[in-house]
Length: 312
Image (cartoon, rainbow, N blue to C red):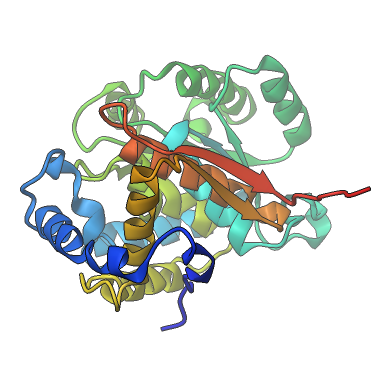
């Protein structure tokens, strides 16, 4: 498998080889605890098997919905906050060229994909409405509960725009809800109005949800091949199953971070030189910050994008 390489050569003056070897017992214990579900938060481990164990029927419905949106819409408005948008935004930016959303309609193959509901900026919403103009659009609203403030406000605004343009029934055919299987305000509304709906799995936390309908529908609408995406994720899941530190680069990264943290190096930077990788860094910040930020113990995470250093 072609995979990301981990280069630890620059760490030699901070970490001795024997220190890394001494981490093996901790890594083995953590891996066992994670896979057997004996640790805190064990109810939210379904992301471990997600690339291989997912609802194939729903996956096919996602692809069918994406084709429908591609055929009847110039724009997909994705409404969500935090993990309900960062993963999809990251993937679309990463998988497409830097100016994917700027290609004129007469040259586009797939709809533009815009994200809203992740802030309370009225000017952003106003500008997006103006950008859509009179063009055909659809909405994918993503919320486990349906009551989170920012997405709820954005959904109300864009639902009204859909109703004004297409009528009640037409609007319902252009709203795609990604929400809880049984509970919550959005689930109730989706069932009442007949929205096409997809399920946010109970055992997958928001920041890990990019390979669920939360991320897969917007990614598929953008034209990316989600079959290949899931295959790559499944290959990676297999690649990084081994708890042997000498064979698992993901665990090497984790072990080095643990050693450095205990030595007082508590700030971590993720630097990239491609603007369309900026949201990869933002997603990484959320993954690390929300996963590790427990009991007042965590790194401080920063992103540096396209950094230029000037010397005089």
